[in-house]
Image (tube, rainbow, N blue to C red; front, side, top):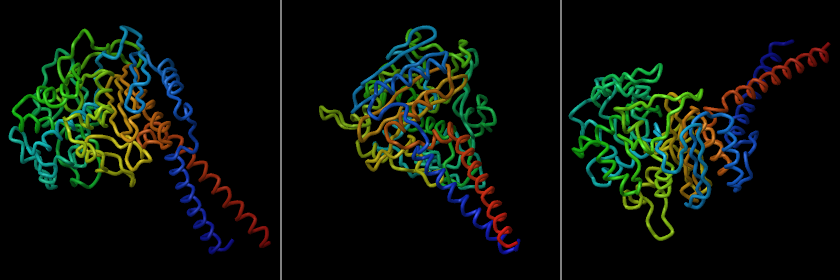
Length: 425
């Protein structure tokens, strides 16, 4: 076999694998190999599928609402202990960040802060530690979109009930309630604006910014400026009503600890299906003429929040405080946020502002169930698979398809080489 033939086969194999990898990537995003869990538009069947997933996978609480054209069309509640309903309060973990972003944008609309100003302009109680990068490039916009170059890796786990809470400044300097592997130090470790990197520490900075600018506690400001005006009267970042607080469950069905947080903005909102439904409905105009934003934010501000600010692999993934799950076919995106925390809290709220269709799912007892069902809802609604779903649930299948393709290409190359040798002899 000549060197020229070997080089040709190698080049051909590389080209074939590149084409196969592109097919796999596009196919995964487009859901070519993914069955729909229900016929498109069949909300009742989708809910039945979601119920079956809870029955099979969770030993905790489950509260779900499906919206069609801005109205609640289906709800379902289940628990392995104390019953839950539309008013039961769940700790929604990182879903808190979406509501926090509304609080920040209220201050932007009031011209009390600027999106593209260095956040250091507004801080006196704490400052970013010195770094090799320009800390003045850490702006409010970049904190909202996780593009500020922060490398804290937070994730906050919270503190047990009998543990005194640190101050915001202490938590920013070194958090003691970090997820495993997280550094817990909020600092600039990459060039601001260079890439998307999820940072709970960034939202802790935004919590401090709100307190510094308003001279109110974060919870007081959020109640006054966002929660009460939207009618989210049961929701709170601190001291939930114990009579309505859903029980906390671990994945094995045992009762879990109720952790408390210094990082309120990032992880500590308590909310219920009824309130989160109101929040989703506020993303669009109401039939009676009430504008999107409901007077808390202007409609054009909501549009600004939905514009892509961060990208992964060329795909838009984040706006100002909200995830961009998938294109909605109308020039925009299905938007929302998920929440996950130990031991087994998982929540999601997602909506297509173009149609008013959405989902709220609050649960304990399974660390990924809400994200799984939310991802299936996005695919069922849009026909596109969200990048979050690909990353969390499809990596193994994608790698297997790549491996099978590589194996087929390798075998094909050997067959061609063998046939060439037979012809040559």
